[in-house]
Image (cartoon, rainbow, N blue to C red; front, side, top):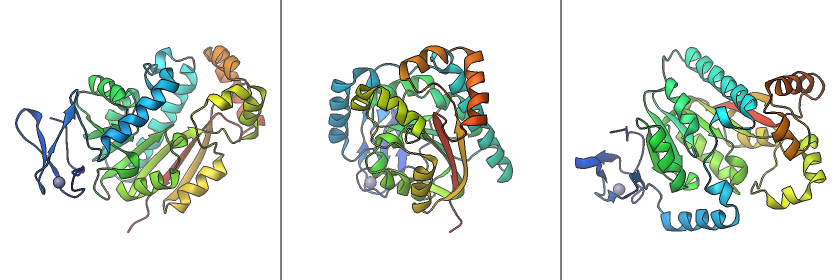
Length: 298
Ligand SMILES: [Zn+2]
């Protein structure tokens, strides 16, 4: 049975969750039993409303809310995705070393999707948690990560104790959330003092990627991103949440053309060359941003 510590009851929003016979979960305070769907604990207070949101999004963009998320090895951006993963692994190892921890007590993938990242994140913690609001993706995440605690939750009403996590990985999710300040306030609340946030998001506010949108206006109609950040704008939001900004990292360069980008960056030589030229001549115009932040001591 994966760990439940650090999570709280979605009904009374206070009690700790206890596991009983045959995987049944209930609240130690109010006694409410947590229901599961397809084996996934539902820890969202307004689950029906959330599911209606996912269903509406799935009707409009079935590929974005339904299709399997490609594993690193088969993604058209496999070399870029590998470079991102290697960066994130490096910063988590550095954080654990600085905190004198062999492994994180608890690590959360906040918006874990199909759980592809949990597969390698599990190296860095004995208790790995993944949450999402898309049940279809959670079922895949659980199948890929049988030892992880996978649960349905709302990022804006999150069922976790204060200071619950040592490391939070929040990857390419925040650009989809209208109330991004509330999402970051949640991160601040559930991260332990001294804990690390690794926040990844597209650098779509930069002029290079704004150029890509201008050259293909339909892509702007089509995107479900509601924020187009630059390093400065996302950094300011993170700081406003009370977290301490530790590092801003630009990663991934390509042509300002979405289709061409996907076609040519599958080749390692092309991706490597764009990285060298981009980092040298357009260092702030990368396709992705990583923000590292810590929670100051109480
Ligand atoms: Zn309760």
